[in-house]
Length: 495
Image (cartoon, rainbow, N blue to C red; front, side, top):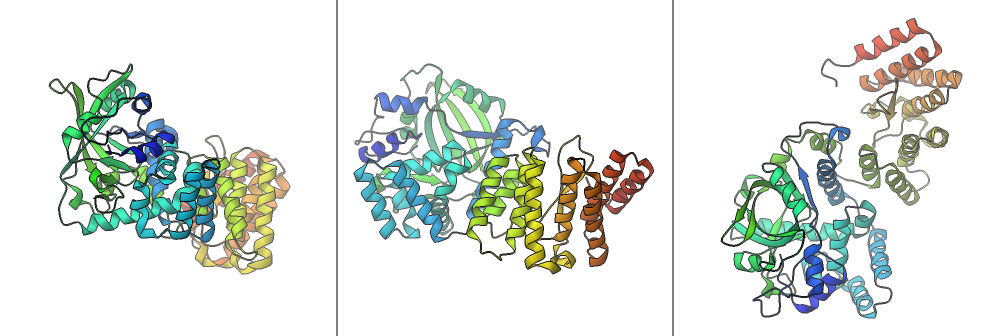
């Protein structure tokens, strides 16, 4: 919890964020209606139970999915490229939120004219628009709300990283007081031993007495309990990939607050949840965790392997496809398409990806149109990519558990005629135009034969598709031959 002065509290309160306030004498929490509203606001805590072993999104609980997507999303966010348009989008979003507030509009002007990346902490702790808007966006867990602030989120994360790795004194334990709902408390009790993350930039204090006051001891609220989070930081030196945190006393606009600030999505292991009779509150003991522990979550590993060092809106869209957010995926594919030149090779990839999103939404005709756009673009601008062995990393995805065929997904490296022909064939197949489906599958197969590409997964997928087409046409012997060919091409370890 942060110890806040009145001005900063006003900005925070205006955005309905989750921090308790202190009076300016620093001795007791403010007791007023706005404070109680913040007490009633449940913290956004995503949990991943230690009992979960599944590696499929469909088999996970909603809480575990939220935990995974936020961890992967933050990784993508931190690697995305930024342009002048990124900054302008954030400024426009801030102006729209404060269009009738002349004081905040003046601060937005000041930010636009003077902001430097090494001032992120100072601006975040200032009594201004940023503190509330950034916190509010993260707590929504909505990508559309977060993306406009990605530049500032990255700057704040990076500045915390600089302070974290330059620190001379090790911080071993800090505290955070809070009122949380009984349902959230019960989830924490039930998931002892599991992992949790909190989506906001989390603040804490080294003074347990201050945190206990923040817990609202002795201030009853129906449906809520006072809790004291004890945050054990002792193992941070053992994991170089841990999310950064730092004492921001000397970078904050309010150094008297003596805050420790943790980056968004910091991961913790729930060690214990016990009721403290003496303090009359719940004590929740959390131990700092990082990527070493996240490696046990297989689905996170799978998704992380598909994230390039340099991320774009295409990377984000591909991730959204994987978590079945098809409308949002299509939106970001189109956003990137609008930013590219007319001959940028990624246009072919994006047309293909838009087609996949449209198909996933149940519109094969619109998907076919997008795949044909990809085909026209590649044939006009990159005709030799159909024979380029460098795109041999093309991957596959099943469309549903009941489908007999596999749809190839174009990688984010090269547009490929092979992939496009397969996808067009697939759309015709789903629309039961078997003649055109067969024609396009065969073109994809012929291009593979001519190119010498060694992508057995892609070739297997095409044989599988042809097998499915033959099955639907009643040509069962030919279907069986292609299915066997598809299986024989794959390694024994293929899942």
